[in-house]
Image 1: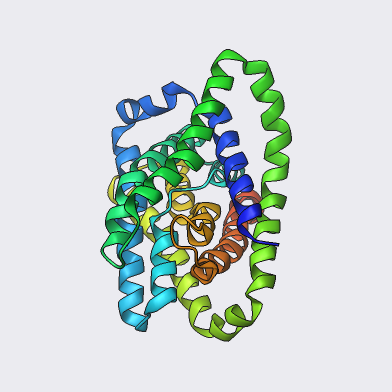
Image 2: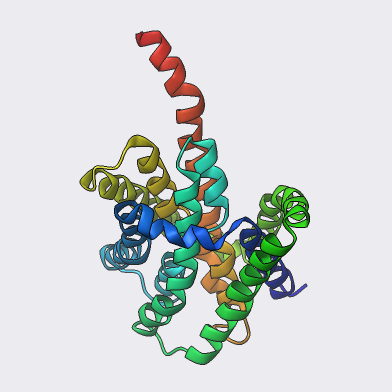
Length: 281
């Protein structure tokens, strides 16, 4: 089975589900909390690609690994970050707003950053992102506004399927390219892990510098750390853009490590920190 036949429907459904949770008012968060939103966007749009470039230079990456790492760094935060923010006791409204803003802004920044590394079919890249990101998000928002009850029902079902669908996507790509992934994991694994941890650290640093409270600090850590791996995989596999499944390898490894690391981060705030606080008290 061609993996693109799986990744495109999954990405479209995930983006539609994101739209079901968005409201026009979410974009007004920039006015209500300008410092928090700006800090989060700086982390996602500027710091994360800069960290990726630094790692590419430090580890001497080239070819597919370098471009694949930059591809995942250029993608916006995924809709799963909203769930993780809620589980960690973060600011869900801020998380949703950052996801919404980054999904729009990266439509412009992604071609610029990737275009500096390789010749791109820019029109195809932009149109695929519009069709697979903006259109389903817009349809989801339309349904949420005019059919809120139906939107809530659809979201309750789709949100439960989102994580298994993403894991299915990752499994299909892993099985298709397991030999290449295993052969390169000694390099890809540490680099991707560092990208994830440094991105989370950048979110925490930005929150500290901007003097945000602990709730919003957790949100920035998660938002800057979680990227839309499904979108990166879709762009890598798409016959209209890169048409090269091996470019998805960093995104696949990132998705696996991202869920493990951020689940541990959530567990710290939900289980271990409350117990530690009670013990100290």
